[in-house]
Image 1 (spheres, rainbow, N blue to C red):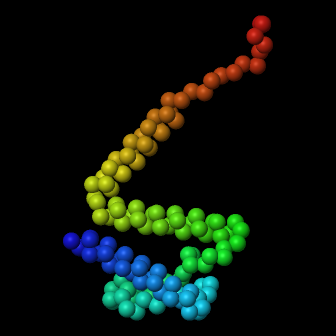
Image 2: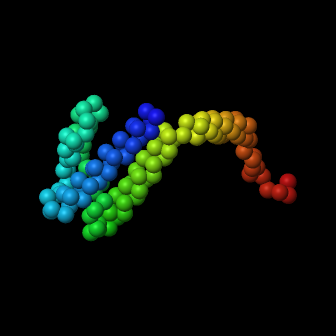
Image 3: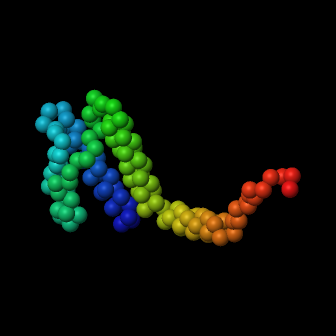
Length: 128
């Protein structure tokens, strides 16, 4: 129950950040390096997370060139990793399976690396 409440609190904090970003972008006061004032969050984690810098503002639609594509890719990877982290926090059995999978994968790679013998090519012509 504590984990579910913590997860719900974190998702509400992310929603609050997103809504504040949207509000800042619509009022025109949004600029690079802006910070989020999270004084509404209860003390504890909230006081530690105040003035978190905004790195990727997804509300800008006029992203130019390769920089915009990199920002969009980094933002989507970040969103995926947050969702994966929430999923793994919510389901402990999934964490166990991921750990077992990673251990077996590392074991298999070590077996392949230690037992592999490359082909030996000779520089002599075939006729001799």
